[in-house]
Image (cartoon, rainbow, N blue to C red; front, side, top):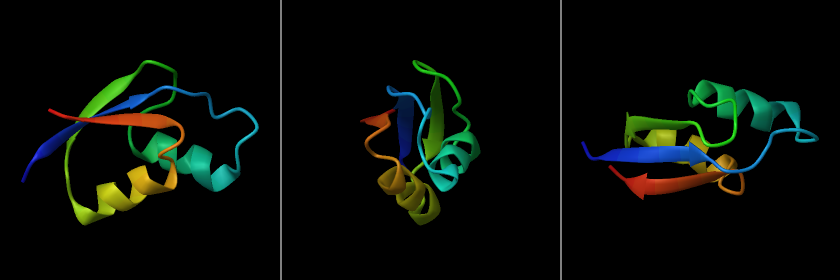
Length: 59
């Protein structure tokens, strides 16, 4: 599968609990932190849920 790089670009302060939990589940937690993960349907759904907080690039 293809890999993607996910970088948190906005804070989770004043966001709903489910969005905070999704950001943590992706392995993020602070601004500018990045992770490289496989592009699975589950990850794509999580990224779609918090797309206003993260930036996605091909890895």
